Structures are given as C-alpha cells and as structure tokens.
Length: 152
Image 1 (cartoon, one colour):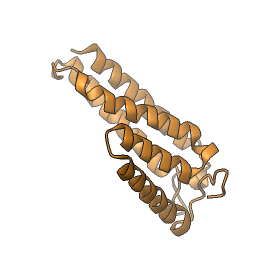
Image 2 (cartoon, helix red, strand yellow):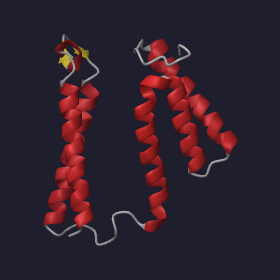
Image 3 (tube, helix red, strand yellow):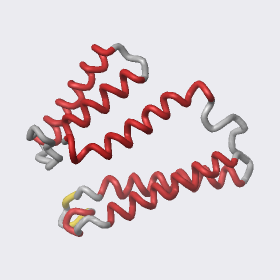
Image 4 (spheres, helix red, strand yellow):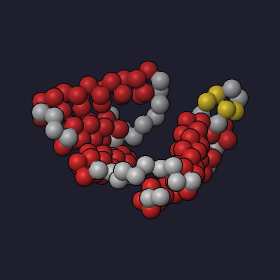
C-alpha cells in the first residue's frame, strides 16, 4: 500500500467534493436542470461526482492491497505534471484579470513551449485554440466569459 497513492486519493476526493459544493452554490435557475435548461453548474457538479467516485475506487484498491507497486509518479514523468499543474494554477488565478482569450493563449502557448514544442508551433496552437474557444463559447453560444483589459 502506497502512502502517496492514498494521499492522492484523499486529495482527489476532497477536490471532487469541493467541485460538487461549488457547483451547488450557483443559483437554482442556473445550477442544474431547472426548467429543462442545463445551467453552468451541471457539468462541474457531475465532474466533481466522477472525481470523488474515482478517488474512492483508488482508495479502496489501495486499502485492499491491489494497488500498483510502482511509484505514483516516476522521476521522468514529474516535469510535465509540474508544468501542467503550475500552468493550471496560474490560468485560474489570472482568468479574471487577463480575460478568457489572453489567459487561454498564454496557458496553451507557454505549456506547449515548456513541454518541448517549438515556439512557432506553441504560438500557433495557442492562437488557434484561444480564437476557436472564443468563437464557440462567446460568439456562438453566448457564454459571458471575462473580457479582460482589451475587451475580448
């Protein structure tokens, strides 16, 4: 039984429950399936439930001794995980200040670059992803996302 795996399972369970709690804090008209409309709380609620359920499965597997004997995170796999974790933290922290488009372009571009992609590929992919998500969510679906300092 790996103590690290147990700790990760408990952390994931806490994250899942936190997501469920936060999704339930949205107003009733928007939080779930009221009036035949899927509100913004619907997806995070069920993702939180799924994360918590997977954490319980991992924890039960570890307690029963069926977990893997290999390390949770091999040495060669640590850098990509740390880059994605740090990038996600900064993405969430800067979302309101930079706005959706700028924050998304920076997140995708810097993450790809730090993971070894050429700068031109990273920048191109970042612009395509940022612009594509903006067109789909803001223009097509009308989702109000933070505009940032430049209004987009």
